[in-house]
Length: 211
Image (cartoon, rainbow, N blue to C red):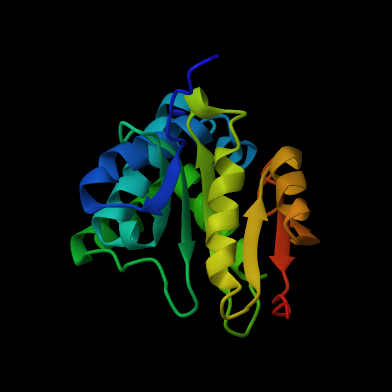
């Protein structure tokens, strides 16, 4: 008779912590370095990695970690993350000195101007009424093909559907677009504010409660 051995615990999804900001920012940098939209905004790979990491780290330190779900393994290593804005929540405001530096960068750095143009074009497509905004869904390279992205998506959508509202997001690849379509998102428009930076605008209508 073969003895029964306890199975290894699988990944779990939980809210991020403030002390995980650097690890999460690095995860986003690793995941988005080859992203088509980010590549169009910041063509130089080294600068792109730095821009992604520093931008996310700044946001997370200002409180955005409160709206990040992470999937972690049994040792606490982060395998994936989903950052989002619930209805009425926006990116935390930059400190005054940071806004000053950003204004200077906007004038002298083409990549900063491209990023602003891109963001404005995407946000112009957001629904007018209350809605969720799923900003970025990423998986660690070492956790690919393990269903981590699906786990994070299903977890947050279950919360959304407790009080059903539309969900808005932009997808930058055909692969991620197909994933979102499997969970009720509809492709409603394309946005190409900068050459090579096409994104798919997707909205998941508010779901009718079952039962």
